[in-house]
Image (cartoon, rainbow, N blue to C red; front, side, top):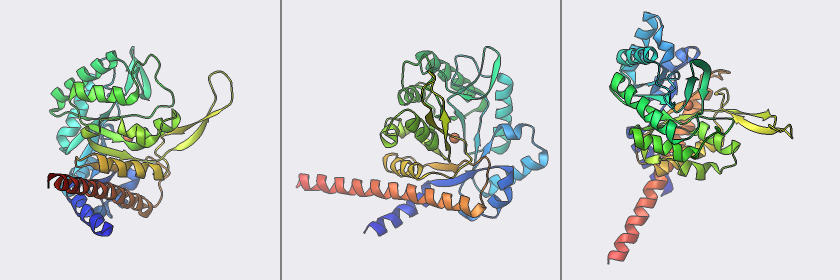
Length: 313
Ligand SMILES: [Fe+2]
């Protein structure tokens, strides 16, 4: 019976859910030769701003084969400062050229007081940054024409001057802006591990009804000196250089069970590339985890319907 249910869920997932991979130049040939096993490709917006016409045309051609997603990494909308208008118009031009099915940005800031930080940083989780993010996301929507999905980021330290925890803060921004959520399960897992939370319980505190996009990737444990000069502590660093760990697939299965939206799941890999078959194995594993979650959800709904029918008689 379970096998039949999983099979049925796989059929539903094949229609509604998508599993794909982030476009990176070293993976280009491998992506083209595995198009039958890839449902969606995510392109980093900033890599396309100054790309050659030939490269952009080849991405447009890829977009005729399967849906594209565009992922921004440089706007930093979760900030009390306004986003950079030049960068925003560059991103809007890329989105106009590639016509993706959705686009996304991070719940982070990237500059402050005129200084560029050079990476995605977690702002204080406060009313001020919720309001700033809502203002910035409204501006992004005005210029691009559609709202980005907003992504939770990994952090090695809890942002100082925060009055809310991460799930509360993400939920408040999503509610204030109306933006859908890109849930990065590796980022969520890293934050849960680094700050002593149970990963599944932590997942359940996010606004899962708003999730439409998902990232999976891998990281590595690193040693961090304690601030007081005490014993070293470990932190899980989200480096995108390692295979997806088992707990992240487990989170994807739980998400598939608890979220009824169709999901587009993207594997992010930024270096130390294994063979393409190893990456395709990770896509297959993700597809199975998602299908298993869908099957469990369908089974629970059937049991609930039977209980209700019994009570009604
Ligand atoms: Fe991500």
